[in-house]
Image (cartoon, rainbow, N blue to C red; front, side, top):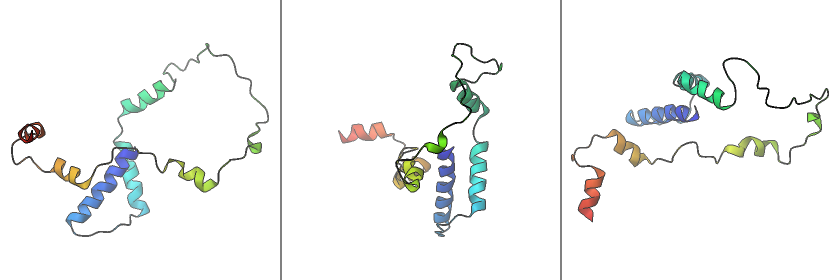
Length: 128
């Protein structure tokens, strides 16, 4: 979903560049529309496979192979302390790559039709 959301942001930026309007701000409403569009673009089979991968099944029957886990009446979550600040905790995934880094030239090359009629392999053979 993150990848599709970022795709919408990139498309908006490219459309703005074509119109020569470089507005770097997006509204909350625009972000909500991008999120809704990204959710709509997810196939139902993908969601089913994710649940299946996590161990959920359609029959609703519980797996009896696992031993019953005793439930504590008073969980001790209140005693837990985070070894990092809240800002560090929230920003923990800031450096995680969610898709390949693509340069602007690569994007333009994929959108531009091949006018020479040759493939990359033929061009590499010519240079060797």
